[in-house]
Length: 193
Image (cartoon, rainbow, N blue to C red):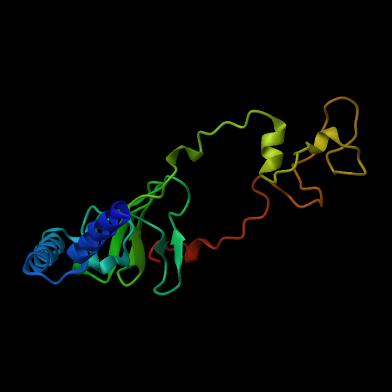
């Protein structure tokens, strides 16, 4: 019984010590809050990785990803694994900011568009080797069969004696591939998006 009484008094003393409003606990709380305020004042929260904000609030040279093309439209650029873009021109000087994309293209983007600071994770995604056919099937990819290996009923390239195609590359439905129909208008090509 004495053993239990001793344990309960020790437990009560620990509870009283942690939840009491004695001057020592108040000074500890004040010192913790002042440390937090010092941390917030000395560290720039805008430069922390993962912060999403308008490009106008970022500095030159910032590494960003998940960039909007138009304000409030949602991120469209630089979203795949391991990619990042870099701000080349000061955002505050004009309405558009110059950003270098992973492809090497420099693009002007509206400063009101939002982006996330930092690079996308998993940079080794592209280097992953698929060791057997089943690995690609697990990813939902079905086998690709060449048209020349098919019968004429299955593909325009099919049939013939030996390895023969006979005409320009077309899809299974007869539409030209590998260049085919050019649909882009050269006058409307605009990098100022």
